[in-house]
Amino acid sequence: MYRILFIFLAITLVCSIAEANTQQTVDAICKQTIDIKFCNGILAKNPVTSPNMKDLLKVTVTEAERISADTDSFIITTITNVGSGPGLQKCAEAYARVNASFTNAVSLFNNERYAEIIGLMDEVSYGVGICKTDFNVPGYNINPMIEKNRETNVLAAMEKIISHMVPS
Image 1 (cartoon, helix red, strand yellow):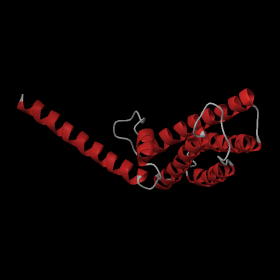
Image 2 (spheres, one colour):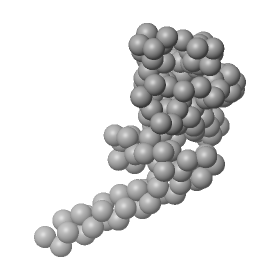
Image 3 (cartoon, rainbow, N blue to C red):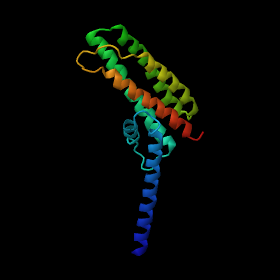
Image 4 (cartoon, helix red, strand yellow):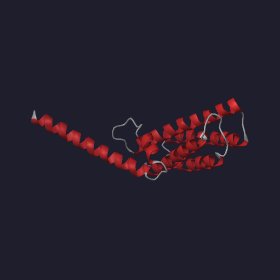
């Protein structure tokens, strides 16, 4: 009986230490971005209890691709519904590149070519820079592309940071 209790307590302690170390790692990653809360939210979607760097990179590339595709879809829907001004058209072109880069990052991850993800994130940052937010989007008081660009920049930074930390 005591032996089983001891084993249970030991396992609980090891899990607690692993979770504390994981949170320290997540905090260290997220403090290097412009939005710690958003970064933590992305990494919290990891289904692994005690994730390693590869697990954290996987959830990041997966969520980045999903969010980028949603942003691209938002832009296309907005153009379809209200027409395209020069600012929105530039965002459409930029996010087509951004979306392709995030999709390529998933492919690189799947092929264990982590270091190559870093270069792709420079393309993402460039694309976000092209998408200026000095235009109005009907139905919104504040241009939603401001928030979408910020999130995209955070995701690109996360992929760069974590890619550096994954052992090759």
